[in-house]
Image (cartoon, rainbow, N blue to C red; front, side, top):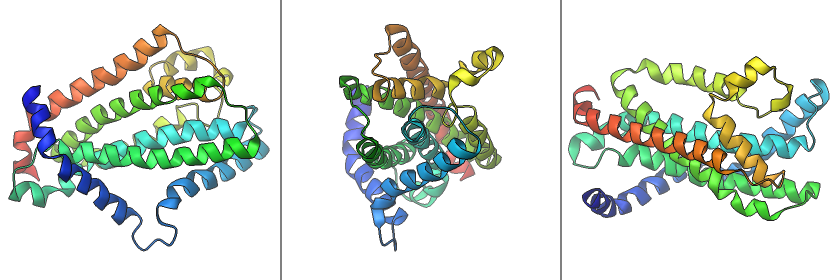
Length: 258
């Protein structure tokens, strides 16, 4: 563990520069630049609220906030894992030339997605102010579900980045699975409207726990119990361990396939 931490310390400057490079590339030639990380969730919230509140008549109190809290957290998972999946393939020229710990690349994509999520939280704060939504002390606990989601995303990102090297079709398959995953997570609809059978299936969805935790502390002034925290932490760290072990066992073969 000490050796891994020392290695990470030597390459933290590279990690920082890769993150800055991605930020510059994402907002290159954009007039508003990084403000789009705030405007995009706000604009999506307006569209989704108009559709589901007025057309589909989804009955959720404070729907704009309900949607935004769920979508911003799920978007972090979506961005981090999707970008991590291509991290090794997109960095093949660098990997072939010099030695760099390969886990740096998917980890950087996850950290870049996390930074974008922090900007998206500004949009959540703006909506709270506009709607005059009352804040509670539990809002101070919001980093906990965010941390769980980030750890889970890193583990899943390591798995996907490894699989994509050997099976390129996973890139296309994951985009379909991610869409299905979005609809299978209560982002635009309440959990209570589901049938008992679907509710049982929902409990197999890690993002159900993270989104619910996130909303509990931000919206409902609830402090999740020990059981909820154990489930969230267990899923997150189990995925991280599996992802790191899987990545480490396969990384020496990357050079043969990229």
